[in-house]
Amino acid sequence: MTAVDPHEHVRQREALIAQWSEWVWRRVRWLTAIEFTLWLIFNLALVGSAEALAEYAVAGVPLVFLVFLLGSLPFYLALATVYAVWVNRWEARARAAIQYARAPG
Image (cartoon, rainbow, N blue to C red; front, side):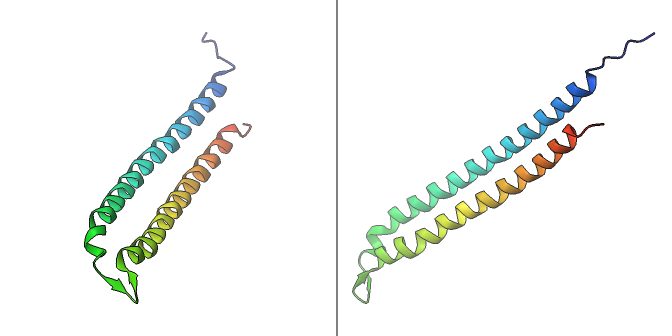
């Protein structure tokens, strides 16, 4: 006769929770790396073009100032928004799976 481990279902649930936690963190790390790369490229492009843009002015305001002011803020806002939306979506999905795994029965 085979003995049934009464705690096997608990171990299975904990394994499922660990899998979902790892799934979220793996995606968050990838998104962070992608967004950091985009941030770095954008900033290097701004710095690299600063000297060329400094020669021009719009209504007496140097063009380089306008590009840094009006170009960088929306870009940074978009990066933060994409990060927040995607991570919240992934965490909600994992939270639902974990709650399902912890449900009795």
